[in-house]
Image 1: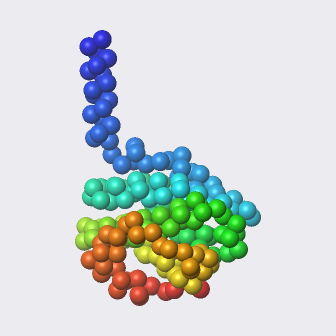
Image 2 (image 1 turned 30 degrees about the horizontal axis):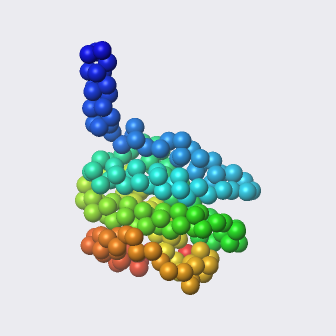
Image 3 (image 1 turned 90 degrees about the vertical axis):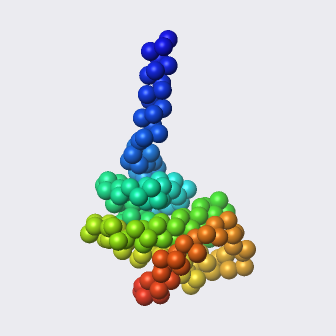
Length: 185
């Protein structure tokens, strides 16, 4: 009995000291990836993407430079690909409110992730800078008021659940960078 208690305590300690890779939602990552690659009828999974982005955000906030292939793919393919597909097109008019809410949540998390990455850019290596560039290129897609997503919701009240995002983004000069990026067509 004592051995089991000691073993459980060791497992709890191992989990609390676990690196971000072991808390990354790999199954949800694969679901998002498969949905984006499904042709011709792609599918977006913004709730699952949001969970992946939350894990990436936790790693970035903790100052852990995550270099796994999944994290690179998240930054370079999943985030830009999802925003490219779900911000424009007639399909979005058929999605339910939960999907739209999850898309908006992903946009907020993208802003948070970019703000944290920009704050840590002084310690970044070439790969991290490349990741950041892909995230920065996704920003105009996520926040372009001319996108169909925003046209659909132009009369909706925007939830104010995350007031710190704009402040964090502004603190690292994000608005200046955002203004310099090319706009989505």
